[in-house]
Image (cartoon, rainbow, N blue to C red; front, side, top):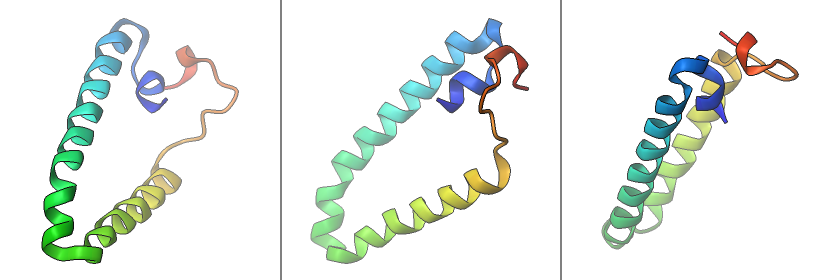
Length: 76
């Protein structure tokens, strides 16, 4: 949802396409690496996800503005 909100109308399609591509690339990488990492470091690999989720939550809470009830054209 965030890529659709942060790009202006002329660049929205390309921005969302690039964001989707990056998301798929990282999901593929995680899928390929998880088996190897779990075999190497066992349960400690899950700490990576805990740390990433926590830091993402703090980032979104601290730095992203509320966009509720605003049309896309008014979000800058």
